[in-house]
Length: 265
Image 1 (cartoon, rainbow, N blue to C red):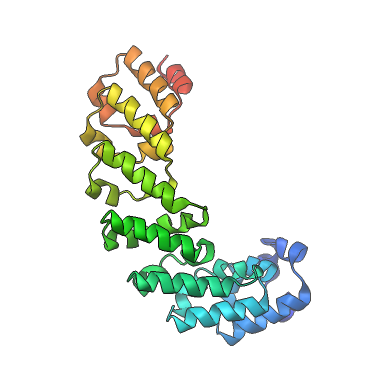
Image 2 (tube, rainbow, N blue to C red):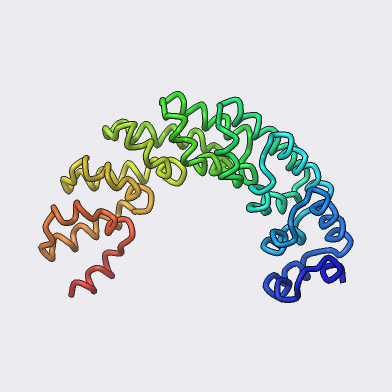
């Protein structure tokens, strides 16, 4: 009844039945009132009905106030309403406020934040502060951080700043230039220092030139040292020239030795 009265089409409800399973009519009514008050379009609400199921009206009101206070455009909020669904967590508005303060302190532009609002939904201010300090200590350019704010989203993992520090040390020890790391900060967001260390040892053992590794740094994140070792053996056994492997290192990141063996056969 509440959804009908607020003009939410049946087809939209059918595509998100969780709103019926999880939501509470009275709370949904309140949330819709808050969203309407802040001029969030019905069309955008329809695209993210989970905000009605998992949000809390009072918290959503506070989050919207914080975002508006920090000049986050309404259009950007509408395109990432999941940030409001997090409102079920008590005190989320306060956390978003703290995150925004940290980002502004480190001169991360409002435009950049608007294009990656998930950093506000998933991050923790204290951890983001530590990550930014580590990146700045290693002289990672602010422009590069802005191009990959997801490196901060991973801050929800406790101790991520320390892990990033360890990864940077490993890459430095293996003479991976700072400029290369800057162009693939994904390796810091998702990598594990121990696995990266082992992968680099395998690649160096097989005499893969540093220049080629630099051109495909993602192999250090998505590959596994043990599996890469096996893949290289398979390729070498089938007389695949090393130069060809070097030009397509992604085969080491995504492939499986057994499967490659079967395909080659």
